[in-house]
Picture 1 (spheres, rainbow, N blue to C red):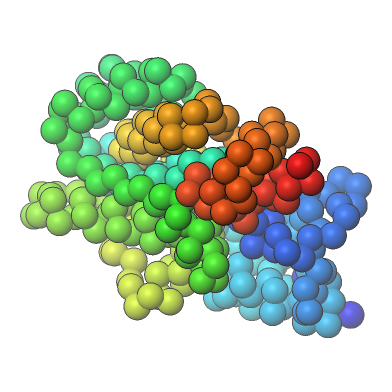
Picture 2 (picture 1 turned 60 degrees about the horizontal axis):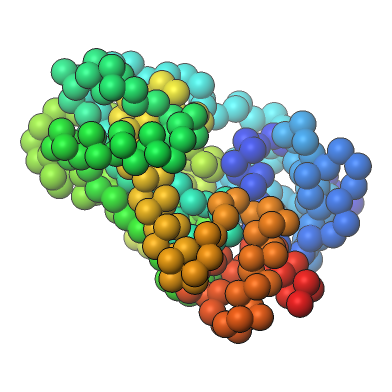
Length: 305
């Protein structure tokens, strides 16, 4: 039996759990999840380690880092904490929202910030949207838009999200394509204006992101960098996170009015109860228009009826 041990970020392990949703097994002690495929058993631990065991563990491990020679434990870690110098100059940042929420769409945004705008944006309170209340996010988003800052916002509504998921797209690929579309739009808007680089809030290993795009015949733009928690360092990524989150909040409000119920964010047991109520009142197919139906919440809701 072969074995490969490596370490991934929490965001990558979250994507892995969703990817292996149909192969999940009872979770061992100290693990986040365990899944078993034809090639290997995949066990992700709370420490960040992921263990691939089986007859062909490299085939599963290669899905998450295709350009590496395994065992992956010997490879150098991705430079997720090397802060690029260009964040102090004019640059582009992108981020997304709604990926961990059962109800609502996925929203993504890319923003171009000029060097002389950085101080002002910090002064009005721009920071990681996860540290702000929804009301603050909505207020700051309006201020940002009033500054005529070049940005691009994309909304992947639930019907399209679920369609792509059925076509075999992982959530990671959807996010990669959203980020790329937003960045491409911003590059078109700014034309020949200078930018030091493009910084993407990292949600998967860079080579996996690039592979998602290559599958659609797309190349990553030059000067593109990836960094976890990039919104803590780049005002452009923080600005993008606020616009993306504000859009998600507005979409949740719209969907709540549609179903005549204040839909909850996240994927908790209370969300299961809301999904069960919608199934009872409107039928199982209705969830396709308001929820990410491949989440485990759908099955949990069905068991509550």
